[in-house]
Image (tube, rainbow, N blue to C red; front, top):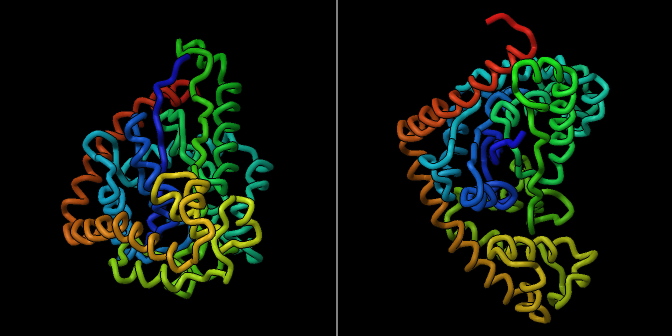
Length: 343
């Protein structure tokens, strides 16, 4: 059967959104609006797999929503909501917990990384998180998900769950006249340049909100002066910029700054090196400051304005949840019939 082309993606409300979140996810969400029906979700159920302060969590849900809107996502044309307002996410996740196999979840590298050595003390939610992620996507029978490299494994699991559900319940799906496959095998939309933004202090580490140094990241709420100062202080090496991509090998900080410029300018790295190769870092950094301030300044300003109006943000989330629920309830009704529940 032909599935309607639809994009789903979510961002966790864990505070302090930075340039990596913007270039790795939000900027791409804005671009995808022109080609697909999009559902953008603040995944607050995922956030509580590790303990969250309830007061902070509310604030952070609104801040991520503000970032979506400030960056250019249109909540009237597309759906923007927070996950916990649509109970179908948790309901379908339980069905998928019964479809997914323990061996599949045991292979998930992200759980091993996040749980660390103290795995016995991690929450069951952190372990079963990939089933919920599959439910997020398949509740809307989304055909595409923009993913970074670190999420590819979870999307593969989503495809495995969809395939197993379609196989296990094949006769039931057919008997209800729902075609051969009920769920699509969702395709990844892999990011372009700078999908992985690294720390401004150490080019071998990802830009992260948990880094103790605020100079390691550009926060989306930073004002123009802070953005400019952090880029000027960003770690570099003494060599001039190369003119060819090969010249960036073994130079993680140079590679990172060129990647950031390329992503902000929506241009290939090769073009950045053609324009700045052979020149001093100071010249390139000055150009990067101008570009970053021009791109990020208005987003930071609009985010601050929106965060100061929580009622407005809550209205957007409520409206989005109402529209998401219509799609979710249709999927769940059919899933219940397929599985054999009486309703």
